[in-house]
Length: 286
Image 1 (cartoon, rainbow, N blue to C red):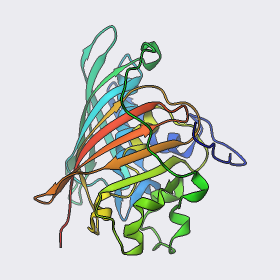
Image 2: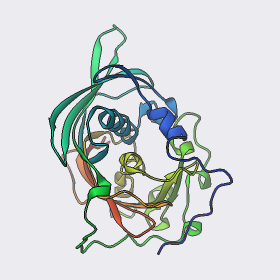
Image 3: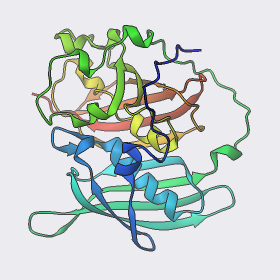
């Protein structure tokens, strides 16, 4: 079992956390929701893709008869900005164990034209109804104890507003994946970290959608600097996570033509593989 994290003085509960407030939507009509995308989940000026996926994931949980995302695939069409947005959902199919829906998030440009930012297709079910049988060769990532890892607070003072999302995360990175921060990238394309929400809220299926896209890009360890925008992201939620910190491991094997893939695994405090993802990201090569 991994070492437990030191509990914060006051822990937020699921449903009573900044993450829950900032992903909450107002139902305007059946299948139509309004939200104000929070500036607190931005990197530079763009809204984080995992946060956006959690927003649409919450909308689909309301629109579909099943509450838990099993698989959700997102295509990021244009960069989302903090501020008002509209989410529209469609029920594609409902079944006894799985329901499928799609959702899109829209904002308005400077000329007042509606622009689609992200489109997802997802299947939802009941994670608590899954059988306990597990047959796997997967193993939890080897990450040093949390006190031997490093977070954003251990580095240089960031430029104001450059990475607001880090102020809302408990992120402790494996030192062996931090060569990029010292100007000595390993070239391995790996990133590993302990992950949680800063206010102590325990993980749930929706926060797993954030976890897979919250670490620094693996491109940094390949010696690439700058923004690495997501083109497509697919997440598989495998079971409901146990309380406590998560361990996230992300790796890329191939950067070619200005694009790379990132494969992520998320493990809970009970040593269970609770989520997997793959994304395609664009790399801005000098």
